[in-house]
Length: 450
Image 1 (spheres, one colour):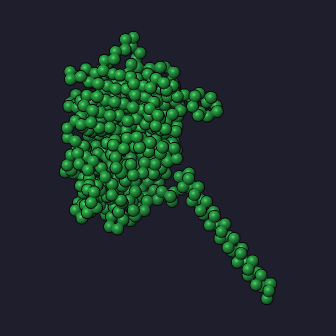
Image 2 (spheres, rainbow, N blue to C red):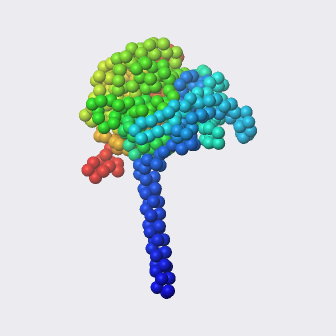
Image 3 (cartoon, rainbow, N blue to C red):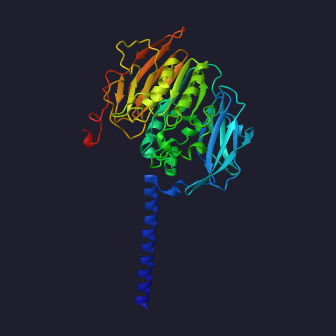
């Protein structure tokens, strides 16, 4: 009898031990999965909205578009909006509009993507909105519409994020937001993720930005890695781009939502797709620049006109687009791709460099942790390697102020463009002279880089 009791006790202890081992293994798997951001179940959509992001598909002064995701069981979804107020009673007057729902299936990833565009909004007004379905709503998010007339504003620019998006690139977008919470929108320079097929990477991108994406309009350019699935011979356009964004359809028809423009408070922003159809975009670009009533013109695309990284060059882009940029006196060109930092406005190394040059200022930047060696052809006036950065750009009537910060909030580069009433531009280089350029040799480079 005693032996039977002992056997029962031992058996019970053994079962509890096995259960503990299994539980430990399960929780360890969850923790590891969440730390490495690779487990598929961690990224499965649910009945609750996620991947919430706002952008513009039309006039920023009177519209706002929003996209989000759910699992396939949510076939009817809505967006609700009201004028923001300090009283929570706005919820009783919020207007509900039905969302457009699209079924998505790629590889083993299935979801429903929803989108809505708020129209008829007042200019320069704060609104509050939420998205979801009955009993499954997001929190309420605020945004502000643009002014109809030129007014001062700031925006954020972020070069390539691409790799280790949640674990490392998240520092960049969060630092940029903390430095300029009043920024009116964020422009991404392409290569948001590394692999065009990788759903996990898009989950990381949304997790890294979090609610920032839902409160500040996101206006991205597309990079070469949004066309890459491990084979450069055949271009594979990521199936996740258009479900995640609602962007203007005012570019060439062959490149919907990857070639477009929008006007914001006295500035025209033109987004080009540097991967495809460059000649057709050049003809489109001429028309967009020829009929431009704005005081400032900023162009964004992925591959640089003048390269920041060693052993790179893209004459097929430079020869087609750069004469147009110069002809129409574009103010600023923002690019990425080279995983370095470079900035200059005299790239051809002209013998006389005029402070009153009407040529564009060319910028190459990177916000993520994948970093290359700098181009030894010093066309640039300021450069960096092995450094994650973000840009804050301010426009106030006839002044454009540009500042580049490291993700540890050090001012690394700056310049100012001032335009006279006659249209004459003056360029002032304001880089901090007491801050040496960062290289692999004087930063926390890998041992082999020292």
